[in-house]
Structures are given as C-alpha cells and as structure tokens.
Image (cartoon, rainbow, N blue to C red; front, side, top):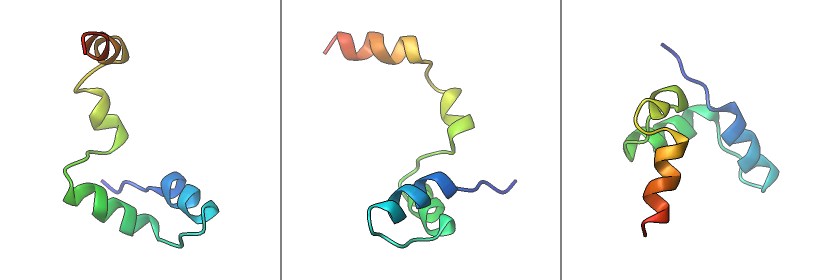
Length: 55
C-alpha cells in the first residue's frame, strides 16, 4: 500500500521548505508515526479530549 503525504509536503512548501512527499513519509516512519487511517484506530477524538482534560 502506498501512502502519500502530499498535503504535508504542500504545507511545508507554502512555508518555504521544499520537500517531497516521500521525504515526509520517511521522517514520519522514522519516528513511528503511522499514516492517518492507522492513527484513527489507536484513539478516537473523545478519548483524546478526555485524556487531555485530566492533565
């Protein structure tokens, strides 16, 4: 499965940083950050807010 990170690369380009979507993917993978569909399986929005409210 190929995951593209065009939106992140585009946002960085708007800020003046020219990087490819593959570079963004490599960096996120290196730090263990899964693509968006897989992140949703870990914690839903309500649980995220509840966990932050406790802090």
